[in-house]
Structures are given as structure tokens and as C-alpha cells.
Length: 448
Image (cartoon, rainbow, N blue to C red; front, side, top):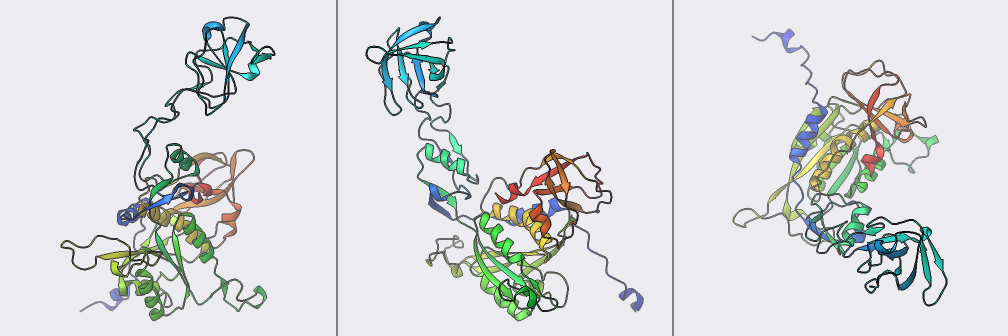
């Protein structure tokens, strides 16, 4: 016979999962999207390259001048030399071989004439009027190869210039253009559905602040979450507010799973009577609630909902040629729509997105790098009572080269994320004294 006292005993709390372990589990689930788009190089900023870019030419193709000045032979410049100017070589033209005892007027980017072994910038010369193109006085004796950009010093033909998985930056687009790519093969954008729950939520503009009912709050998560997703190159389907009812939540999730790669929810993933997201996902698929050893943002849910590929549609309405059919070619493949459930408190939601959802979405796009690089900086504050969990403290850089701490580190204080430049990644249980070296991750590294 069971002991009533034992059955009434509280259940043991689940152990906290290390943040790095949670990220690793998410990345293991993020099978990269296979669909590739050919996109104009002008439009590819922020997208992930789907194939290596191999140079079909050498850049620069010939030795060229790095300066406006004069191309000379070193043998003619042993002293305070005065040389006749034998030719003028603008960029885009090819000069004649440089005759001994002469100089060639040359401009930045122009091909260095045969026989020249240095370029003297015009500031180190004196033009002397005379017949034809005149003469030039070469003041300092030039060094071999001075101001000459060598053929192939930027790119060698046949080399991989940009690797698959590279997240393209404006400078990468310029590099791709420099080897002749007008279009780039990129992984298609992840399709993400954004869903908010909570009858207490009100959209800005619907009710003025002075008429807000008791207990109501404006939905801030929906705004920053959409901006974060768009910065990651996602196509966002905003499902708005879903009523706090199980049937409504199931209907919204079922519809979203048919058209999206990922569903993100904020709030509604704990064990309260009005938290229906967890039960709704479990009714359609699977969901695990993870308690992650991080502050802010301990509760996080991950799961999936099966969706037949035949129900997916391309953005233009056509049926896409993905994913591959099952062996034998019969019937649609069951694909998986991922679900990430974030906590409702705005700073917790913001930080769990950056630390968990962002790397997951980059991995879906096949990105080779999914985490920003931390830098070491000086703490200009004291943090004497650290939490046992790994903490992410909102800070701001100072004119003195240190970090100042926002005074209120609460998970509902969204002001701290605007005031701050980034966070200190502080190991669990580690106190910080003024002057200590800490790990700083700037928001700009996450939000680029």
C-alpha cells in the first residue's frame, strides 16, 4: 500500500541544463535547408552562401599603380634625377614599354608599363614644364616595387574566395563582384511564424496608455522579435495574439506548421493553467521544456510538429521542388516544423533568442559561424552576489575604456537593452570586483 505522505511529497526539480549543452542540442536538430536561390549580388547582404565562390581570374590581372605619380626605372633614379616624361597612362589604358632614362605619368589603377620597377607618388616629385609632356624631378630615391600593386596580390585565379556557409557582408559582396559574380547562390530564407499568447497583452495603438485596463500590458516582445528575425534574413509570418485557449492555440500551430520551418512563441510554455502552448505542441508533435542555467531566461522549450512537404508553398505561390521524395519516389516526405518556446518577460525573451534561437536559425541556413566573438574588457563596477546560473549582465562601454553596469538587471527591464552596448557573460557563481577582466559580447555582434 502506498504511503499517502510520500505521494504528497513535492516532485524533485529537474536539473538545470548548461547553456552550451542547450545550444549543442539545438544545433544537432538544425538540419540545413537545401533549397538554393540565385540572387543578385546587390541583394545578397546578410544571406548565407550556398556554394564556394571560385575565382575565374586573377585580381589585379596585371601590376598596377597604387598612387597617382610617375612610373620609373630605379636605374634612372640614383640621385636628384630630372627625367623627361615620355607618356601618360590613365587607368583603363595600357602604356608602351618605358624607355630608359624617362618617366611615365601614371594614375591610380593604371597598368605599370613594362620596364618600370617603381612608382613615385606625385607629392614626392616636381613637375617641370617643357616640350611635350615636360619633365619631372624625382626627389627621394624610390625603393624596388614602391607603390606597385602586384598581379594576383588580392586574388589568384582558381582559389576559393568565399566559402560555402559564409554569411555575406557588404565587403564580401564587393569581393564577389571583383571576380565577376553578378548573382550569388544563397540558401533560401528560413520561414518563421511568430506567435504571442496572453490575454493580458494589448497591441500599441489599440488602447491609449491612460485607458489601459488593470493587469494589461503592451506587447513589446512581438516588435523586437520580428526585428531580430528580419535581421537574420527570415521571412516572418506574424500570427499576432492567440487567445489563451487550447483549441485556438492548436489551430494556430497546425496552420503555421504547414507553411514554416520554425514557430517561435513567447510566453505560455510553463505549467500554469493558462499556459496552453506546451499542451498544444504536444498534441500535434513533441515538446521538451528545458530549464537552462542562464539568467535571465531560464525556461526554454524546443519541439517539433510534423508537416507534409506537399503543404509547403514557395513565397511566389508555386510548389517548390523540395524536399526530395521518399525512396521509390512515392508520396510526400514528412518534414519537421521546429518550435521554440521563449519566456514571456521581455529581457528573458530577448536574451534566449540571441543565445539559443539565433544560432539555430543560422545553422538552418548552413552558416559556418553561429556565435559572436566575446572580447575581454575591464569591469568598472562591482557584482558581489552572483547567481548560481550563468549571467548575462547588461552593460555599457565607458569613455575610459571600461564597462558600466545598468543598475536594474531585472528580466522585465527592457530599458537595460537599449541603454547597454552589450552584456557581460559571467560564469555562474563568480563575483566581479571593479577592475576585473570580464568577457563582453556587444549587441552589435548579435544584431549585425
